[in-house]
Amino acid sequence: PVLRDDLEEVAHRAGLRPDGSGRVACPFGYADVESAVRGLLSTGLFDAAIVATDQAQVDKELAEALHPYRRPDGTVWMPNVFRYLIARTT
Image (cartoon, rainbow, N blue to C red; front, side, top):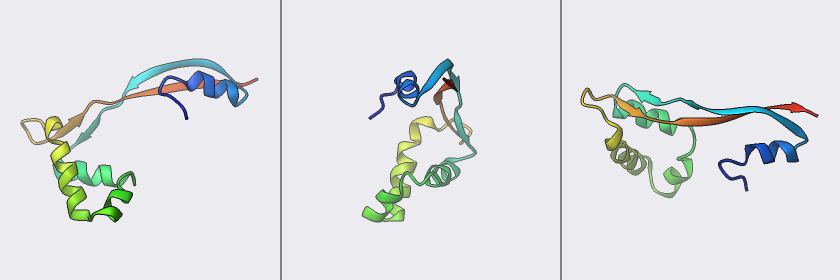
């Protein structure tokens, strides 16, 4: 299993030479909660939950989980940071 900050080690094990890395802010922004739920569902990450329960339950749980990210104008804004690694063949 790979830990969050193990990208360099993974690159080395794959025979690559790390040549730079960093973090970039990439927030997820949606027009409203319904759009956010649709966007999150489109990732496929919640398919198993839908099979285990049902679509309506998963939609409800996601909508509730998004409440802290809802802005006064109704938009949903979730901060997010991606880690990246540039690597070269050795």
